[in-house]
Length: 200
Image (tube, rainbow, N blue to C red; front, top):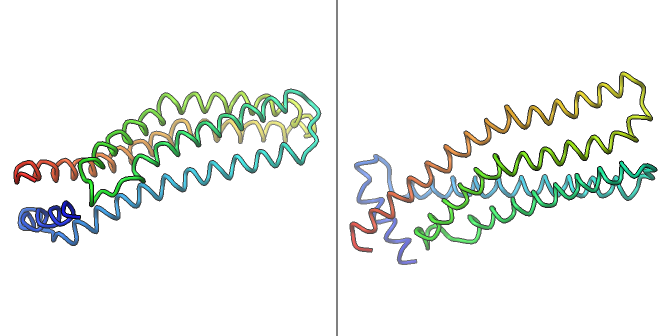
């Protein structure tokens, strides 16, 4: 708790420079960190709900084709792995109290930033390819029950959504997250530098 009081005193001593009180700075930092944690938790929850929905679909519907079972297996596996990766990233910023251990939290935040970058670049494409293959295999049986125009609509909507998420949405989310986390890292780096200057 001593480090927390040191942070407050440092912010207070620089209140003229940044035109913000230590209480306001602390409130902003808490809000930003909690926002990142909440968003990560919501992402994990959404993935878990998708996983449960697909498992229920698989259990309660009598699919006849092996391609359908394989497609659902691939999709469920991809969601499970991606959810685990999201959870691992969430733990990086959830397990440390940034007010008590600012330096440790800073290192974890940098690692979280790197993980998110990899998640939205390399790993995202693996996930998207797995979902696409799973959907194609699933559609072999399912689309046979629909008319031609409904088949076209289902294919266009499914792969249109995948393309939209892989391009426009992915880039927008990546840019916003990069800016948000970078600003937060910058704040903690400034605090760490001030600790060194004051000998804490």
